[in-house]
Image (cartoon, rainbow over all chains, first blue to last red; front, side, top):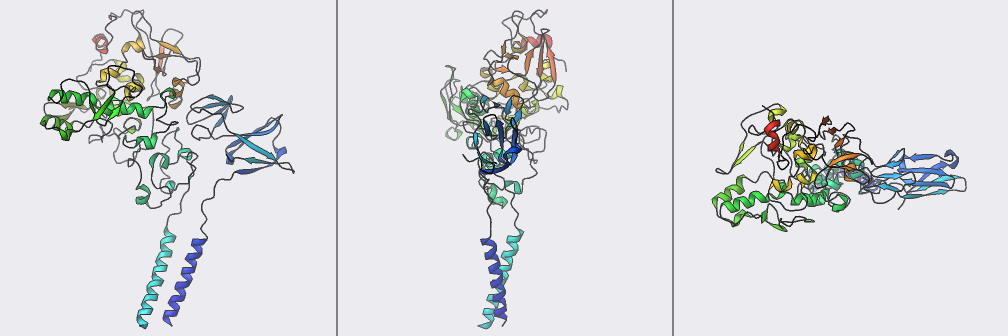
Length: 128
Length: 412
């Protein structure tokens, strides 16, 4: 009788550990799409920083576009300044359109795709 | 038989309970996915209290593993640290290429000013080539003073001086029998960037890049120093310089006997002469990156690489100091000023420049004919005049500091 009780408890604990093992969730990968909400939230001429996507959404007369705020040099987050964007880590600068003004970066800011859904919501794609 | 079954069941139950408890007590990992690597790492689970090493190396961008190595997913300290590069100092020259190298980091092209590691490997502070050549010559192991050996074998990079060697072999005293050379090897090879510092807080420094860029002197050697800077105070240079001398008779290092507590007396050894600016400023205010870190040529004497003179800033009776106006937004001066923003420098500004064209980015002429300098370590603003137009009695061909000391040396 004792043996049966001990084995039964062991079995339950074992099942518990197995369940814990199987339910392990690895750290999620960063998303590659961001739902930015209704397009009319972003008036013409607006420059909206999308912090979670490390990107900036631009609404120009040509429509919506976006630039990655990840510096093409080593990946620091670019900051907006009066002339465009600047890297707080190494000093690279970019104009308001993301074109390189000075290094150490040697590439312009990466353009991101902005999709407008049929119900007029904006989806930002950050995948490379 | 029944008793054995009961005991086995009990042991199994205990093992499962113990396993559950151990699992439950494990640290909850703090995950960080640095932009640069894109790979999750758990180092911050334990190291949340470490300050950011510099504004150029934010942890969100670099993480820890890119520079330090280590097992990024381990939660056990021994396992996590087991594959770290250079212990706590990834800039040790044995591992610096893996830690700090890369074309966008510190072993890129000279034209992009990214060849720090290559230049340092050839620098006198690393090779110790002159001292080794001097000793080998003195004890008859070579016929002249030409440098042939360094602490490590090294090749010149982008060699511009035809009078310097193309390469050095690694100095290996085990193949030599001269007692003098062996004593030198045992006692006198503690200055170069490969070795640990001499004992004592005044000589405490790291190896490799951190010897200069992670100021430690006067601090507690047991304390972790997690800092990289180009604002290097003279005290850091003095971890090696001005702390004493090697006695070539006894082949031992003799520390200076005074114990100064103020800057005036601490800066140079008691026998030295110097001017006010030479002890008020920090070493890096005058001496350039090429002088300190090498220019790719393999030199044998400090005099071969050290070229800044008083006239570099003060000019002569006939010439004003050299200046240059910054026209290129990629100018090295702007990059250096960005890393150590003691001065607000921009395109169009005029700064002083050395005879070799290195920017003295912290010094610029003023409209009234004087000059202003910002201390790289102190941030202090100094103003000074040029020699031209003064009653200075210097001879144009006598520009070494010892000539200036004749009139301008500080009394102490």
